[in-house]
Length: 333
Image 1 (cartoon, rainbow, N blue to C red):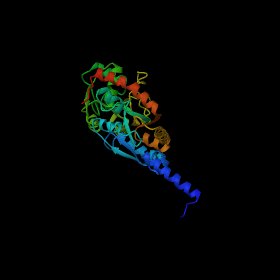
Image 2 (image 1 turned 180 degrees about the vertical axis):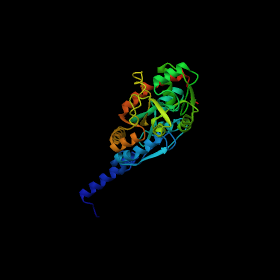
Image 3 (image 1 turned 60 degrees about the vertical axis):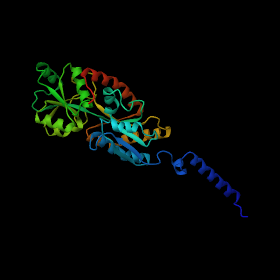
Image 4 (image 1 turned 30 degrees about the vertical axis):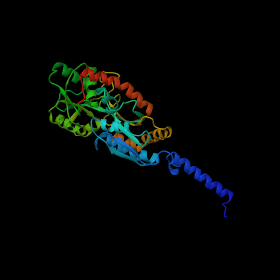
């Protein structure tokens, strides 16, 4: 009877034991050896293609995939003001293969307007990191006889019924930023909600409304063409693409800040290895000079911060959003 040499018999026995062990865990030997990620990662964008969040998601996905060693695939799941995509990720397996990139709309605006969301902005997610800030800007039709916020406040106080403002939607970050601005200034303007930035911008340029608040990204082409004028940006700092436009804080309201932001999150309960690798890969992606340059060119501000900073942002911003929703009577549509 032929017998295997001892060394070969030992090697075969160890191999069989390893296969049995990994089979019992539901893992292939290859997956066990490779660790996370062993397959492509899905990045959910809860908006239609072409918007700011979609652009940023596609911009960072390639570099993020290079650093993870697996493709990062974008999937748009739009609907219900980000609720469709956000709830999909909240209910996905917490294995690191399903991520969400979204704005403050998901994490602070929706919860301020709806107490019965299918997700919790804190308990449902494991923040991976802040990606960028989205500067918002108060704009005026070029014939409106004001050039700064102080002049606008004085004009509204003189003729309060003359002024209204548009936004890219009821209950959006633009709507909230405007109401925070009017609250700080002690004035009240009628809100005209539009279904998106494009129709609001068209009516501003056409003179149907005197003011709007929109993203810097959306406003840049019209500002450069001289079709509209800038009054103030609502974030804590000036927009890189508009260095001559003051902030609301610089216009007489120190400490004022009301912009939007983008973050990447995973379902709560992310394994330690996946969490560490995702944090490292996102930090390296946002440190890439090409990525930062493209973000600025798109009208955004690179603003990487780790997951803990995202959680702090939500916990700080949510009560303020709830307060302004109640004060301005902003309701979900």
